[in-house]
Amino acid sequence: MNPEMMGTLGTWGPIVLLVAIFYFLLYRPQKNEQKRRKSMLDNLKKGDRVITIGGIYGTISSIDEKSLKLLIAKDVEIEMVRSSINSVVPVDVK
Image (tube, rainbow, N blue to C red; front, side, top):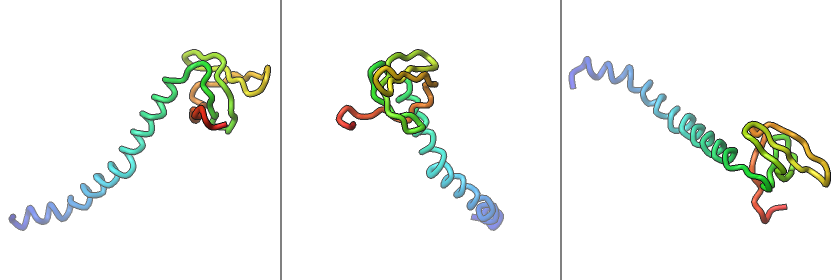
């Protein structure tokens, strides 16, 4: 390698390395998490037990494209935006 190429590699090498680190440690995991969350929200159905972002446990009593109704106690329903669901509770967890 000639000295000019070595100088260019010395200048751009750290920048390329930082971009690669940024991609593998930040960008890619975030995109995977977004895909997982979108999949979870798309697969919600009536009867699922869920936790909201605010920490409220409830069961979905009705659902449409943008919102859902959550049964949080006997005869107590709240309407919320679909994206406010944090996770679906597995059946064996109470």
